[in-house]
Image (tube, rainbow, N blue to C red):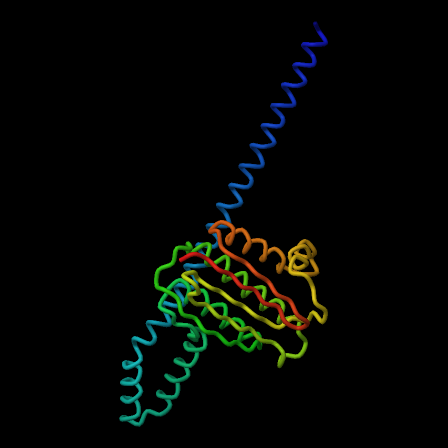
Length: 243
């Protein structure tokens, strides 16, 4: 009887321990997701702020011209030159590259592509999307942000700056949001697409593999499509998401 009681007690302890482990993992995962969501939300707000400044500058364009004309009319050349210098500094910080009409998408893309240019990466982009999308702002930030971060990371490993490039296309294809990113890479041999995800666990590959996993999760969440292609010197990713 004692042995049965002892066995039952041990079994109960194991069950309780299993429940506690499961609960701990659940709470940890939930807390991590909440933290990531807050972080991405702040990122979206930051890039939206940049985009708002850019639109504001365009709105004030004529006012700037009037100010410069006034300086020139009074022959205040030094003041006019100083004013132009300040405007040039502002423009360098908020250089617009994409104006698709979708505020959130434009904000993310302008921030990322401007950063790519500052890293001596040639950028060619074409973006045409509806103003409203089914994909949430946070998930859109995950996909676009990681695709371009991965592309910039790969380009950064190309020693010859003349060989660094990113080609971005976003549009509507067969009633879905289509995203294509092609970039230069230092890899001289062809690799299977899954190799990049597996290598993400290694510190030598930076965040590339981890970013691909996060993209996969978003695509799976919306029942979308993800395709990767790799050739010597070139890496390409295609994503389809429902509108």
